[in-house]
Image (cartoon, rainbow, N blue to C red; front, side, top):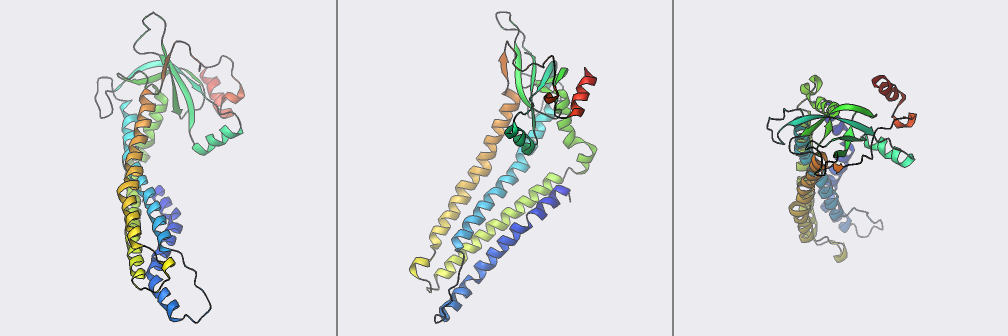
Length: 312
């Protein structure tokens, strides 16, 4: 079992304990109310959590796990296929395109500035840069030089000049630095990654297991609402409507969850695919050129600054 799978299982144990408590509380609710009704002379009042609140909490958590299962099982795989298509020859065909051509361009590292931006950068674990290259379809109609300027995610946070840029055929705005593509693909095609290729499947299995558990738990809690209502021992204002509970269940399972997990992931993929393949802009004046004189703040670390000097 992969380390990420173990991490998910261990980190979700507190939530598993919570939902097990919900199940026990729902199971014990009829006995608890019956005992309270039989001891009406006692002054102690019992404090209980409404079963309807448990249903809402369970269904909201179910929404997350279904979304996560779809994201991990579909979105991540499609993203990996897209990045692998950059390394295919220009005359090759794949599910995501027809391979890539190789150009020469520059990479301008967009160093976060300001405390707030640096904090977001540390939390996101993503470095942003701009790749610039000559438009693969040549100059404009008036003869002026056309460039492409594109925001990318980079694994090498420093300025670079005269680097190989891969552009998907028939998608001139899809340029990605070859070094970054190779680093991305290596993260799931290296020897270590191949030995753990089933890791994603295990994560999906955990997510599906959680989804089945929560789906079943919601149904059980609703049946307990019905059982409690049939006892006719609660005040009218305390009775929870089982029909309303089933309506909420139907809204979540037939509407809200498919919208978030299905439509949400589809929209996320469309946005990501468009950002990678069509997110650049054509321009005749570059605004993200590598500066002629570099400052220490232009690099993430002193090591990266030294590496750039060595490359120059």
